[in-house]
Length: 576
Ligand code: DGT
Ligand code: CA
Ligand code: ZN
Image (tube, rainbow, N blue to C red; front, side):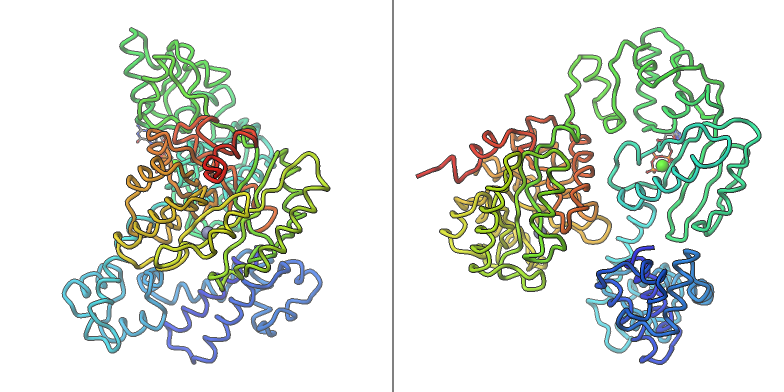
C-alpha cells in the first residue's frame, strides 16, 4: 500500500467518524495524519518494516496501529466496521463534489436522507435549503454531483484498472495449473474508463484457481461464482472478472472477451456476406459456445481476408471497412516516441532532478526531452521566478554539453492568466526552446472568457503547445467550459500543437478530440507531464489514447526527429 492509499483510508476514517458525530478534535487528527502521509516522501511501508511509523508527523500510537494493519493485510478492521455501521448512501454522498462529511451529517440530521435517491428528491423539492448553511447553490451542486456519480460510478479510470489487472495477472500466473493469463474487455481495448477488469486464464483441469482467488485479501465480495468464471468486487470497489478456459480454446475466447460486441457483430456480418459460417472463422456468439482451435487472433481476420486489427481499434467505428479497403492506419507505438516535452523537476513541484529526468529519458532511448516547470504565478506548484528560470536554463546548457546522445530543451509550462495574458514577458518566452501554455486557474469562468484566454494564448508568437487543453481530470473534474472543436480550429489557424496529456489522471485531449485534431491537420504532442522520473512511463496511456484516435507517427510531433520538430515550432517558423 502506498502512502496515498493509506491516506485515503485515514481520510475515510475521519469522514465516517464525523458523520457518526465523533468529537471534532478526533476527526481532525485523522485528516491531519492523512495529509501528512500524502506529503511524506518516504514510503510508510518502509518505515513500518523498521518499526518507525510514528516518525511520520501526526501519526501516534493509535494511528500507527491502524496503518500497520492496513500495510499487513490491505484492510482495516476499524474502517470496515465504520463502513458497516454507516449507511452506504451516506458514504456515497461524500463523493459529491463540495459535500463534506459535515454537510452529510447535517443533511442526515435535518432531512433524514440516507440514500442518494432521497437526497436527490430533497434537492429537487428544494428542501435542502432548509438546512442551516445551505442554499439553492447547494441544491444545484447536489443535483450535478449525483449526476456525475451516476455517470462514473459504474466505471473506473484505466490507470486504476490497469495496475489492478497487472497485480491479479501476476498472482494468477503463480497458481498451479495456469498456463497463460491476459487482460481482455475494454481494458485491453485501451478505453479511458472501464466497467470492470476482465482476465482470461488458460488452465489445466483440476486447478483450484477460483477457490484461491475468491479468498484474495483484496476481495471484498464475491459477486458470482460459476464453474469457469469468478466475478469479484475489490475493496476499492473495482469489479474483476476471471474467466477460465482450456488452452486449446484460448484464442477464440480471448477474441470474444476483448470485444467490442459491436466489432464482433460486424465481423460476423462480414463472414455471412462472404458466405462463411462465423463460428468456423472463430467468431463465437457466447463464450460457452464450442469454438475452433486457432493459434492466434490474426487467424480470425485472415479467414475473412482481413489484416489483423489491433484491440484499440475494435470499436465498430469504421475499422472493418478500413481493413477491407486496405486503409488501416499505421498506428503509433511506444517505440515511435522520440522524446517527452512536458515534465517538472525539483525546480518547481517535481520530485526528481533534471539529471534524473535525463537519465530516465536516455533509458527509454529518447533523443530529446523538454524541462517545462510551472511559471511564477502558480505559487502552489512553486512556479519559477524569472531569475530561477534563467538559472535553470544555465543548468540545462551545461547538461547539454555533458550528453551527446540526447538533447535537453529548456522549456516552460507557462500559465495562461485570467485575463488571457501569459505569466512571463514575451522576451523571456522567446529565450526558451519551447513553450507550453496551460490554464491552471479561473476554471469557473464562462466559456466566452475561457475561450478568449485560450485564443490569446494560441495566437501568441511563442506558444508552441497548448497543455491539457480541456482541463478535465478523468472521473474527477469535468472539462472547463471550452469548445474543443473551436480550440482545434484555432490551433490549425495559428499553427499551435495540441497536447495529449498522458497522465492517467487526465488523458486530455481525449481520443475523440485527438481524432478530430487529425482531421483538421493539427499535430499533437504526447506528453507525460511527469513530476518524477518514474512517471515518464505514463507515456503508455497517451500512446494508447493516440492509437484509439487512429493516429500515426507523422501526426505526432514527438515521433519526429528533433530537427523536424524544431522547424515546426512557431518560434522557428516565424524567425524574424
Ligand atoms: P466494459 O466492461 O463495460 O468497460 O466493456 P467491455 O467491452 O469490457 O464489456 P464486458 O466486460 O461486459 O464484456 C467483455 C467482452 O465480452 C465484451 O467486450 C464483449 C463480450 N460480451 C460480454 N457480454 C456480452 C453480451 O451480452 N453480448 C455481446 N454481444 N458480447 C458480450
Ligand atoms: Ca469489461
Ligand atoms: Zn499543467
